Amino acid sequence: MPDIKSEIEKRRTFAIISHPDAGKTTLTEKFLLYGGAINLAGSVKGKKTAKHAVSDWMEIEKERGISVTSSVLQFNYGGYCINILDTPGHEDFSEDTYRTLMAADSAVMVIDASKGVEKQTIKLFKVCVMRHIPIFTFINKMDREANDPFELLDEIESVLGISTCPVNWPIGCGKEFKGVYDRNEREVSLFKAAMNGQKEVDTKNMSIDDAALKDEIGQAFFDKLNEDVELLDGASAEFDIEKVQAGDLTPVFFGSALTNFGVETFLQHFLKMTTPPLPRNSSEGIIDPVKEDFSAFVFKIQANMNKAHRDRIAFMRICSGKFTAGMESFHVQGGKKIRLSQPQQMMAQERHIVEEAYAGDIIGVFDPGIFSIGDTICNSNKKFAFEGIPTFAPEHFARVRQIDTMKRKQFIKGISQIAQEGAIQIFQEFNTGMEEIIVGVVGVLQFEVLEYRLKNEYNVDIKLEPLPYEHIRWIENPEEINMSRIVGTSDMKKIKDLKDNPLLLFVNSWSVNMVLERNEGLKLSEFGKNN
Ligand code: G4P
Image 1 (cartoon, rainbow, N blue to C red):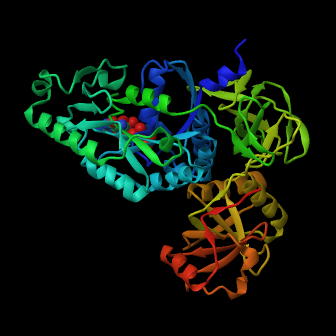
Image 2: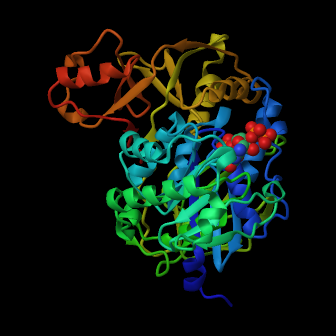
Image 3: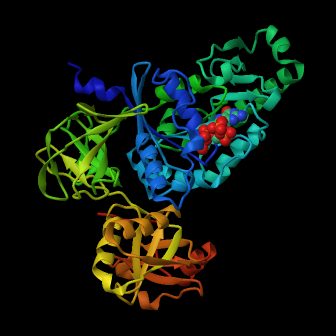
């Protein structure tokens, strides 16, 4: 019988953050390839078929089905048990994308070498920083024309505010991509694309001191490499594992996921530099993953996976101990004993029932409608709750009106339930009641999901009237602030959430600073506290 400690120590749970098209899917496929979970890369998802017509709910369901299948991918490699959490992007970018990062122990940031740091990466990066998790950078697509590597590092440092430490360094790019230089080993791996990257590649390595290297890569690249190495050794941050693990320094790797170049080296370094699941904070103090019995928290709730039932699946991240199928546990927020039924896990593409799982793993359990985002489930005698999951700032807002005012009750019930699942956030005008409802979403697709679900599940037609606001701020110190006295800007709106917490909406980002300047003592936050 495998002992719990060694099972947990094998676990590495991370998310890949990137802007759409940077190569997240391709890199994931290559990881799975090394883990032997798939034979030929290129089959994780049929990208072309996965693109949906957003107005068609069946398609949304299908898309959701796909994102569920890839909610977490588990595979074994080199003695590790790896969980890759999917962070939905593209049209289905939503609050779930952020919440997934709450379940990850580290993040891999994929950057397109020709584009640098892009918008979605910045947003996801902020959440990683808030959690102080280690971030590893993979600069992808070196087989194409790329920006200057020094400029890429500068951009990461200035835009994201994290120090960088290149572990390897590219020699040329695009058609002239010669390979990468490993700074620690003082060795060059020569670029050779094999079978369009569908198989593991054997790389040819040469020492930088090997006289034959000059012939292999050409005089000009050889000279440039030596120059770069000297510059790097003098200028870049020293590698410091403690800083990496605190999320203050990101190790940087260059490669090409498509041609499978630099992927395995990256994976190996990454595994060595990351830790197994670490202790997490709770209402009863620190929870040790190995010493405590089973505990987990819900980070995502997925509704209507089976169209015949209105069931939901609650995805939970196990934080300590061992889970066994059918075990009885305690739902802390509900104050009740529960049996976790139909536990599911994904292995590569297949969803299957899990018999057991350990701290670091993600399981999806049947939810009869009792769980909320952030809830804790635990088996220990001291009933603790993990720190709640924050509410992330929506970026799109609309006023909702029901077309048939007779159906008020269904409307309120439906919209409240959908909000409880965490798909949307609902607000009201600061001084009025439920008659005016404002919906905020992180990704616009959620508006369509809301409209469709209210119609189909609650038989309520609504009209959404887009509002121009793009920035929302929670007031961190509402007890010290008199809302009627706030000196605003012309584009500012006061609203409240369902728990009566006051918030401010802005059209322009600069207004946020102006309001801060005009109101001494006011503290604003991009994250809302939950639980
Ligand atoms: P994403 O999940 O981050 O959105 O990106 P994805 O992996 O789907 O990659 C986006 C596009 O970039 C894909 O091309 C993919 O083949 C390409 N790509 C990924 N990594 C590399 C790389 O290292 N080098 C080069 N040259 N291209 C790369 P596509 O034509 O949009 O899609 P597909 O038809 O190939 O699936």
